Length: 201
Image 1 (cartoon, one colour):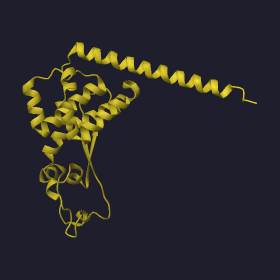
Image 2 (image 1 turned 135 degrees about the vertical axis):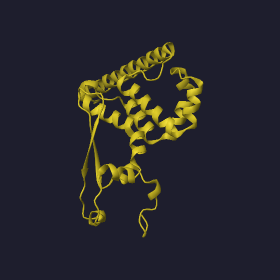
Image 3 (image 1 turned 120 degrees about the vertical axis):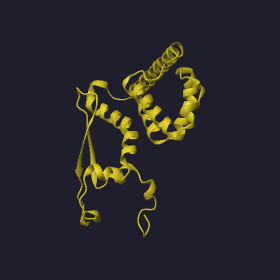
Image 4 (image 1 turned 180 degrees about the horizontal axis):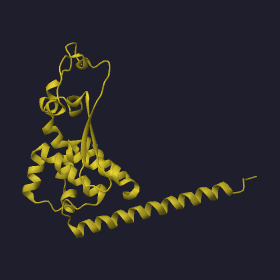
């Protein structure tokens, strides 16, 4: 903020463009698409409410340039709504799934390096031309990230896998988990033994 107001107004994010209108997205458990409705947020610090002007939500959205923003954010909203509408049926995301979620949604540069890595190409069978497009265009990368998260979080195969490499990776992961569990059990047993040892006289 500056004395003259918002210094990034031309590049303001969706939430700022909507305010004081609230976008409400709802996706019922038995539905595949969301429905949108709108509410007016009335707060005393918003001086726009004092303007002697009426405008429809549709015209306000157009005036604020929101149609393109909403189109690009639709896949992200679908992810959130799917998680909420699925409830406990999909289980709690693993720590790794959450790390991937935050990387895709909030660290696009790191996600770009991840997609460009050999490890990614070993697992995912992405055509070279598509990979090039994804890595050269931030919007394409973001949309690809939402596809990737549908696969990570919900098991939807939106990106073809190299089956053998994926299976080997899964086996290595299971072996590592088993090794860690065994080591943890051994540590607990050692600690228990130490607790019950007779003190030296």
